[in-house]
Every structure is written in C-alpha cells, then in structure tokens.
Length: 90
Image 1 (tube, rainbow, N blue to C red):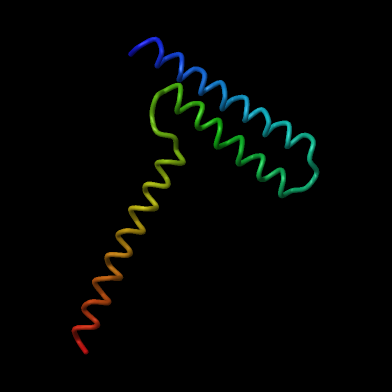
Image 2: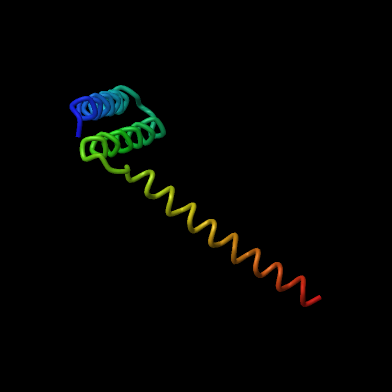
C-alpha cells in the first residue's frame, strides 16, 4: 500500500470525524426531537464511514443498500414470473 493511499484514507477519516462532531454540536444546540434524530443519523453515518476508511472496507450503509437492492431484484423477478405465468393461463 502506498503512502499516498494511506494518507488519503487518514484525511477522509478525519473529515468524517469532523462532520460527526458537527452532529454532536447539533444535538447539543437544537431543541426539537426531529433535529436531534437527524443529528444522531449524521453521527452514526459518519462514524461508520470513518471506521470504514481506516479499515479500508465498505461502510455498513453500502452493505445494507446492496442487500436491499438484491432483495428488491429478487422480488421483481418473482413478481415478473408470476405475471408471466398468470398471463399464459388466460
């Protein structure tokens, strides 16, 4: 692994930690529950991204999205098969 790649991963990770810090600021200074929930999501997303950058793997959000998309594609194929068999039975 080159020094440039390691340095880039460190900078990306620090950037995500900084943005998570903004989320902590939002929790502390805003009063509504909606803003606090959004800030918690901001913190969770960016802490996950910072850890993923350090470890050099896919973040949890990408893994979940890929799993949901795979499930959606399987469901679409099943629905399409059912539609085709229903239309041939007419």
